[in-house]
Image 1 (tube, helix red, strand yellow):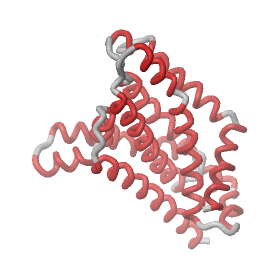
Image 2 (image 1 turned 90 degrees about the vertical axis):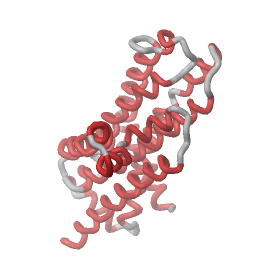
Image 3 (image 1 turned 90 degrees about the horizontal axis):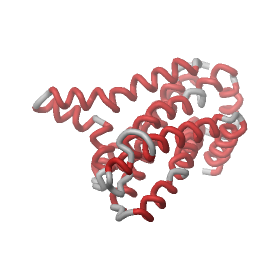
Image 4 (image 1 turned 45 degrees about the vertical axis):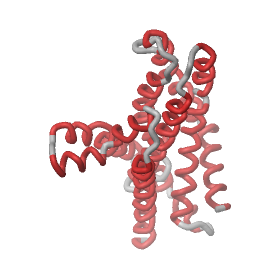
Length: 241
């Protein structure tokens, strides 16, 4: 556990040293703030004390931002050869992957935490459905964890950051849109299967204020699969060497 935390702190510090964290925070808060308070279906136009417009825009901004954060995590280390140095230390492949996962997730969680003033502002101007708001935040965190694990997996199979970014987006598109579209156009077992696989279905359920064990298990399953697949890719590399 200590090794995981050391790796996570090192990676999180590198985000802030390279300005990636600041750029991500500015862009995320800029996009979400603009569309939540100023443009489109903002809280004033809707006329309700609801953060649904924020959750809707965060659902998309995080989809694009997270692959940009995760693309270098393993791909760059493989390209520069520093992954070999790291793996010669007294750490396991799993500790490396989980440490990097934790660093990416904490960066996204910090960005989401900076939007809490939205909630405080809204609570002061109207009657907020507290349960729906906190469930919405939980949905964003679970969705982010799922996309971080997918990004780490794609970063583990290539040493090219752009390829890792595009692969993460490609895989993410299925969970974000395509499975839901297929579920809407199919019936029976296949329709139910794609409905279950659709990330948007599970996120919408949480953002409405409904916590279902099936939704939580769904997100945690994606997280576990992403970490296991990334770890297995590192293990293959060790065996080939």
